[in-house]
Amino acid sequence: MLRMTSIRYELIATCPHTGARRGRIHSPNGVIETPCFMPVGTQGTVKTIGSEDLEALGFQLILSNTYHLSLRPGSDLVERLGGLHKFMSWKGAILTDSGGYQVMSLAHMRKISDEGVSFKSHLDGSEHFLTPERSIQIQGELGVDISMALDVCPPYPCTREEAAEAMRLTHLWAPRNIAAKREHQAVFGIVQGGVHEDLRRESAAFISDQPFDGYAVGGVSVGEPTEMQYPVVKFTAPLLPVDKPRYLMGVGHPQDILHAVGCGIDMFDCVLPTRMARHHALYTLNGRVNVMGKKWAEFDGPVDEGSVFPATERYSAAYMRHLFKAGEPLAGRLATLHNLAFYARLMQEIREAIETQSWPDLMARYANA
Image 1 (cartoon, helix red, strand yellow):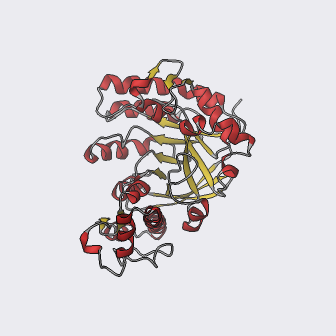
Image 2: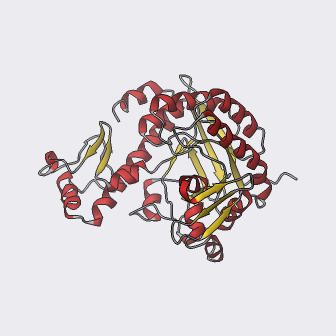
Image 3: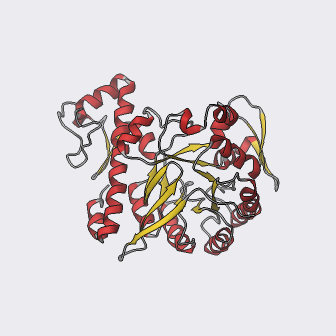
């Protein structure tokens, strides 16, 4: 019997210039305005900042990681303590990836079969076996709003045969993911196929035919150049159901987001804004700025007058440079707050541009971002 879902997608507007969609995802933990960006909180925290910071910035959905949380502190412990929302004191919605990408990245420590993936923990070398059923069970114990199906994400570069095999396993596991979910547990399916158009078409058709609650494009942003990523997104996104959310996994450069939104994608996640922040890079309308540069040593103002945000506006570029030079933890925190504020504004302005039919103006504003 097909179980009821706990999320619902509402399409509000479509851009007349592109395939961009303005919508809402109704979840158990609030409404998510789309297109949206998910800050990455791998281990139940977005590095250097708290849940109150994310709420103040206006984020409504974050991403956490099944693999890491299952190993430490353990999904059973999180469930006993009231679920991941309560555990990390987060009032918004949570999406968890399946753990598959992390397991696949442990190429020297794992073995894939039709049943699942056996791997050794990066923490202590202990052996584990991750199946679609176990991945969905873990995510159910975490109590998240959206669970991702366990799939196989091929690396780049890979042969056509490797891409086809990853797709075969992803398709083999898709019904098992669905069958394993709890009542009201929302699960998204994932399209694979590498850079091969025919494989992507086959995968989109198969995955779309499964009763998932949303659909993701996987296997991009795995090292392929932009000129290979864009055609895959442009071709695949319109093949996904129009009445469900569409999620592009792991993509987060501002220009890549703008391109993908124009193709009809609703959801994004990426470590870029937070990781680059810890490496003294700030996002601005004029591109990324290295605040460690000498030019900022005595600059008593922001790195970009067009990107000043309430969370960090009191701190000068000279001060932030000093913090990084001195190795102060506050440096990473302030840079993270700045970058996430930049992304929050980007997504808000994307949503407004779709509603007001001013997409060309938006593209001009972010031409150098």
